[in-house]
Each structure stands twice: as C-alpha cells, then as structure tokens.
Amino acid sequence: MSESSPDPERFAPDPAVAQVRDWWRDGAPKKKRLDVVSLTGTTGVLEEAHRHITQSVLLDATEADAEDVFRDALRLIGVPDEQVQPYVWDRAARLHGGGKLVLITRAGQAGLTRRSAQPALVRDHAAERLSLLGPSVVVNTLPSVLGASPYRRLAVWLDNTSPDGPQNALAAAVATASQSPQLRALALSEPRRVPWAAWSELAQAAEAPDFDEAALHELADRFPELVTVTDEEVSFTDDAVAEAMRRETPAEVSERVNCHMVRWLRGLAPRLRHPEGWAASGPLGRYAAQGLAMHAVQAGEFDGLLRDGGVLANLPQNALLDAAHCAHDGSVPGSNAAADAVYLSMYGVAPTDQGEWAAWLHLMAMARNDTELCADIEQSGLRLPWKARWTHWRPPGGYDPGYLEPGPVYALFEVRWRGRPAVAAKAGDKGVRVWDTETSELVAGPWFDEDFPNEAANVLTWPPETGRAGPTRRSELLAHDDSAGGPDDEFLPVSLRLGSLTVFAGPGGVFAVEGTDTEAEHVLDPLRGAPLLGAKTAAGPTLLMEASTTTAADLAKLFPNTPVLRTAPERESGWSPSTNVSCGSCPGPRNSNSPQRTARSSRSVCGWAPRS
Image 1 (cartoon, one colour):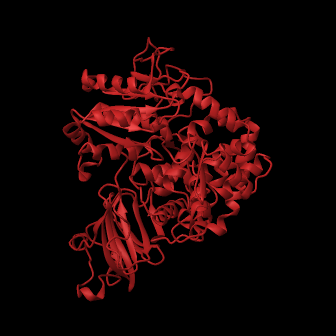
Image 2 (cartoon, rainbow, N blue to C red):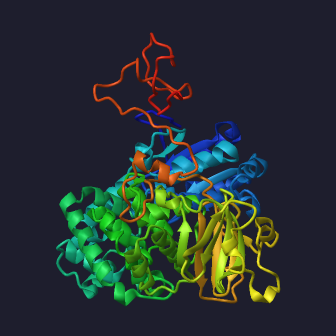
Image 3 (cartoon, rainbow, N blue to C red):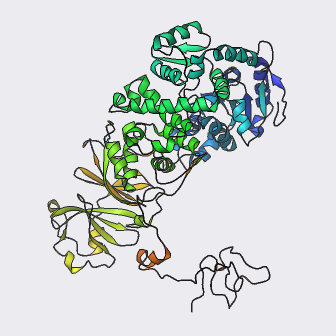
C-alpha cells in the first residue's frame, strides 16, 4: 500500500482483494479511508472484497452525483430515510455506521458526462465526509482523479504493467481505436451512451469519412471488443479507451466538435419537445438533456446558453449544476439561471420531476425581473405543475435593495380590500401589509400601530362567508391566522390557498403561484432539505435585472427608521493613523505605536465614528 509515494507498489486483482481484506481486518475503523486505484475504475476488486467482508455494503457510483452517493451510502448502512436529513444525519451515521465498510465502485464514472466534476467530488467529499462520521470507506477511483486531488490517502494500486495487465490491454485497445476517425469522434461525446444520430454528427464535425449511420453500424460490428451497441445507442465497452483518446485529441478539434454539437442539439429542440422534458422523448432527447450543457462548456459557450429558457427548462438539475461548476471552476457569477440553480440546490430544492424544476427556475427568473427568460420557460413545451404569478420575495442569493420589502413573513391572512381578494401579512418588522392577490399591488400598509388607520375601516374586511366584521386592530387580524405549513420548515414555512392561487411566505417575503392540479395535496412538493455535503459550487449575488447602483446617499431612503451616521470621505493620500482607526470591534489597519481608538480619532476603517 502507498499513501504518497511517486512509485507505489502495485498488485494484481487477487492480491489487491487480499490487501483490502487485510486492511479491514487489521483495524480499518481507525484508518477509515482507502483508495483502490486502477486505469479503468471497474476492476471487480471491490465486488470481490464485498463477497468476503460481511460487514460491507457495495455502492455503484455510475452516473450519480456526490450528494446522491452520500445519501445512498447512509441508507445502505442502515440510516432510516427520515434521518437522512440536515442536522440529524451525522448522529445517525455514527450510530449505524460503526464497524461497517462502504465500498464505492466506479467512482470514476460518476456524473452524467465525461467532463463531470463528480468523480472528484465523490472521492474528496462524499467518501471523506462519510468516513469521518460513520463507516470506513473504500473508493475505486482513477489515477487522473487521484492526481488532481489535494487529498492523499492510503491506496492500493492495481498492477497495470504485467503482460496481461490492464495497461497493455488498454494501450492495445487505444491503438486500435485511434486508427478509426469515427471512434476518435465517438470519444468526444459527453454522455457515455450515444444515439446513432449523435455519433453521426460527432463524426461529421470531426471530419471523419463515412459518417452516415449505416457506415457506423458496420464499423461497430467490426469492433465488438471496443464498443457495445443496441438498436438505439452505442457506447465504449471500456470508458478508459475513450478517456485516453480524448487526452490525445488536439484542442482545436475538440472545440470544433463541441461547437457543432451545441448548434446541432439546440437546433433539434423543436423535435424533442415533450410535456415531461426532452429526456422523456427518447434516446436523442436524453442525450440532449444530459449532454448539451457540458458540450457548451467544452465549446466555451456555456454562458450564452443561460439566456435560452427553452433549453434551460429541459436540462436536468444535476446536468445544469455540474456544467456550471465545470464552466467556472466551482464559482459561478451571479444573476443568471446557473446561479439560480446553485442557490436552489443550497436551499434543498431537488425535485425529481423536470417540470417542477423548470417551475422553480421560472420563479427565480421572475424574482429577478427576467421576463424574457420567464417567457422562454413557459414556451419550452414542458408541463409546469405550477407557475409563479407574482413575487415580493428575496430569492436565495438575493442581494439588491429591491429585495428589502417586505422582509421575513410568517403569518398570512385571507382578506378583502374594497371587496377584492387580497392577502394580508405580518412581516418581521411588525408591519402589516395587504396585497391584491390578482395584481400583486401593495394596496395598504405597512401599519405598525395596534389600531389600523381610519381609512381602513369598512375597506379591509374578511371574506363574506366568514360572517365576521372586518379587523380594525392588529390583534383582531392576528387572531385569525389562516396560513398552513409550507414545503420546507425553514425556507418556505408558510402557505395560504386563495382559490386558484397559493401564496407562500418565509424569510424572503411572499410570492404567489398558480397550480395546474387543483386537487393536488401539495402545490409545491415538500423539499428534500439542504445538501448533506454542503454546497460544492459557489455563486455570485442575485441582482434585479437592470438594477441601479446603490450608494451611501440611498441609505436614508432604504432604512427610513434607522439612524444613519455619515463619515468623512476617504482621503486619496492613503491611511493616516490620526484619522483612520478601528471602531474596536473590527481588525482595521492601525499603526503599531498608536492605540486602537483615541480621543482625537474621527472615524474608522469600518465606518465607525464617535458621536458628537
């Protein structure tokens, strides 16, 4: 075994199984983590070890993302579903995981595409977190994943150099496949399973001869040891062959092929329309849904894709998130659909239905006033189970003065205003506000006093079927809280059905949606909960479309009830210890020979200034 040696000892498969068994028998619970490294990531070592270690569970990571691998592992070691949740999973993992071994195989094939970030995230985050708090973990991974990782763990390396070892077999397979321009083109596919029509386009873009589907079928029949075929799709028998050929492909060829695939797949959109999303339309639709975003990353066109709501609505959540992560090295700029997807994931939005995911993207676009993106999503061909009608809501990531009103809302009331349906709310600032449910207009408030204004008398009323007189005081309103629970106790804890509309509220404010199924128990399905692994992709702030720049001059208007203390302008000559000190609670720059605060000081680097 090796941890960091540049030339580690290597083992044939059977001795490698013995190494894993010995590692487990000799006290794995103290060591916790082991890598099994092979060129293909599919050696069968972990499957064989599983047969010999009764305390082990086996988990295949193929096409999965790190969060799903982590959740599946918790369930396999016995954590009940109701405890696979934030705040409780770690204790449950300790309780159920002690003395158990999780074997994660094919981690190198995690994610929906070849460029995916998931193989590294499975090894460096899912396996690491699992082993820290519960069972021991062995991961079957690739040398490329290990080489790019900052984490060094004890590893069993498979012998790749023996005459009958995988390195020689792989080299022979790559040499054979490389003779075929069509197979080199197939390796540039992002999804691993490729419809025949998509292979034809890949080959055409790579300028391969004989790229029609009939010729490709004949070619595949000649190389049964290299490719696996069905009536609808083709794939490499060993993904390591594809990865090796991708590494040898000139950058200009890769870019040309990926640019072609982006144009072709976007042009197919009308043919792929389906109420349940492109993926439900067939193999080609699945390829487009899973692969278009990553092809765009490879082509350098991902950011341009974010303005096409018709495309975005059809991309699975994990495909969009993975592509965004890869396009921006894990840190996505704000105020676009990719950042929206990142923030929704952070807040536990992970629907399995494509239409519901598109509805969430539509809501986020509406909260940013991105009307063009909203319209594109509505016209995408998807059946949205609900659609946002209006928002007074700071979306996840919202960072704009326009999101300050109304603030947190935790109580909703069905009322009438001048006879029109309306919703009243008590916000976190104690103010009572009333919105027209059809127009979303703020028709009254905020009212902060116990007694409502005189002009509200006979104008603010309860629905006529209640038979109650209209509320004239805050306490009368609060005594009739009509709100029910929302889809998440933290993010959206409050809801209120008002005919065809349902209003949701929480720390961000309020928004209203219209559901298509009036008999459904839930308009918005309950949320899964925040990622147990935490957010592995960052995103910039969410701003309103065409938002104006906010300066210190706007503070009095933004916070009318809060004292604003103005400080002297910054001096261009730089910091001076006689005028620039810390307020005492911030680590502002200061001269080592001067006190942190002096009587002669007029302001601090954080804005603190003494009152005169």
